[in-house]
Amino acid sequence: NCGLITPAPLHLVRNHGAVPRLDWDTHRVTVGGLVGKEKSYTMDQLSSMKSVTFPMLLVCAGNRRKEQNMRRQTIGFNWGPAGLSNSIWTGVPLHVLLKNAGVTEVTAERQYVCFVGPDGELPKGKDGSYGTSVPLAKALDPAQDIMIAYAQNGEKLRPDHGFPVRVIIPGFIGGRMIKFLCGITVTSAPSDNFYHFRDNRILPPHVTSELAEQEGWWEKPEYIFNELNINSAISSPAHDEKIPMFPGSEYTVKGYAYTGGGRSITRVEVSVDGGHNWRLATHKQPPLSMYGKQWSWAHWQYTIDCDALAQCDELMCRAWDEGNNTQPRDLTWNLMGMGNNPWFRVKTKSSPIGSSGERWLTCEHPTEPASKPGGWMGSASGGGEPKGDTT
Image (cartoon, rainbow, N blue to C red; front, side):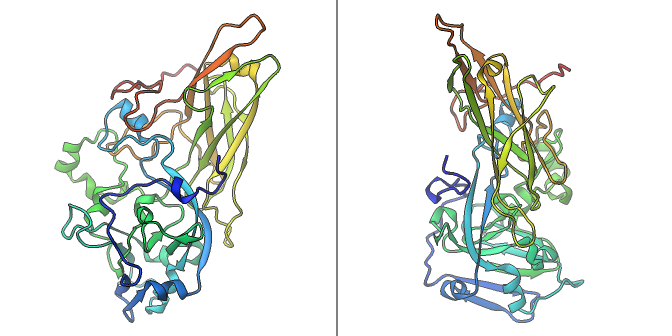
């Protein structure tokens, strides 16, 4: 309801540990490794450089995970469908900092850029830091808009969102956008950080925690989750919302959609008959970047006659992007519960018709977030059984 831009106090918060106490005046970001000249920047130096500002959607890789947990318990906690937020970010383009350090092209030795936060921030790994990496080719490409950000919605970053400086990688999952950034290192190999390998993976559905350890699944590079997959959800009607079904009335169904890779959402569709037929919703997104990339979500809506709405047992949505990617009908379970993106389904139940012709439609989302017990998928692991093919 706040529109396309999420206020910072409402922005999702996901941290792997306690927020470190950092100081703007003493914090530094170093650029080193296989560079021509190592550089070190204070926050005043970074914020005085030529900056860029643009809106970007930040999505937790576990958005909508609770649906997976209701099918079968993953190793992740219960995100509902609100693990995402869209803010306006300001900072210095990464490619500028790399060029200042003498890195202008990919070579046989220069292949990756690694990012890392403070030592001792987290309990695992050789130094307790949180780190990751991206290919140098992506980092040097101005069209990718990777940013070293120090401001959100026109003000300094708040501690929960990475103060004083963080990485912004448009189109990627939030888990790759290192907060409390300390180091940028050009390397010949991907990051060897514990959390680069042991977090943000979409493993095949047969892989359990035990099998992942025994057979080395965490180290298999093909299962890394970087670029967002396409997704959508319904926000109106809300869970437990009761819609008055007066004769001749209408209701506007609303929600969000997003995708990765800088692709735009091209359409969102709504179905009231189990997915046999789809109705085209209207949607809006912020303007494209100067390179034609879309880094924000879409908000969509569809106004439906309440008589038709009262006849349906399930209201569902799906999105398409400009690569003609769309959402699957059913979820595919994975150990970390990440990338969950099946059709979003809201089950409905109509009350008996009253003496004046009125009735009420009660709406139920698949889950409620965290430990809340509501949702048609149930409140315990194993309650959300696969939906059979009714075609």
